[in-house]
Image (cartoon, rainbow, N blue to C red; front, side, top):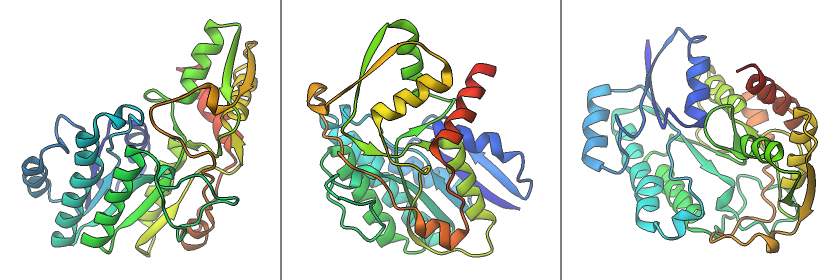
Length: 286
């Protein structure tokens, strides 16, 4: 039985993998978070890795406070870069498989078309820069790794855009949402299934892959879809990003081309609205 180590298990993606884990009796899952597997401590990473002795590591952990990272550069670098380097090296030395989750923030957002895995990264924020350094360390120290870049992640677990929008639309008569940043959201449950599909595949093709749900929308369009599906009456107004300044610069365009992962692993990219309906339905039932 293969032992699968999940870091960041209490986050959105880790929580969704927990939900699906019971369907995969061929794996022994070891779910860890900052308390059991602190990525800020290199010595503890090494000792815990040795004790667990995983066959596969899925690194869902990250420093994701994008704006706060502009000040907490050292901590963001430790978690998003140095810890990834340590995990990659440990996986390479023990011949464990390594799946690392990265982000659309490695791009500058200036592309006129969806980003492919071979496009040149140019991150504009500390978060994006530290995630890119993590990717580089991953590929350098463990060339057999798989990196999955994703974007706009949401789930019934944790804090995210969908849950925030539902709360604000319930509390207020009107809200403003940025309408000039384009991408596609990712339902964490879909990404969790993608990862498990890769694990149960008969092939292991290392390298970088892109995955999000299908569609090309703005945050404003995402918000209006949430409003429609949740049946809320709040007025939603589109505003330019310049009206909502943030410490960290967001990519104006971060649509990811998913054709590689679709072709290599036969992944079906689900339309974003289909997944959004599913997630909001779960919220209503909970």
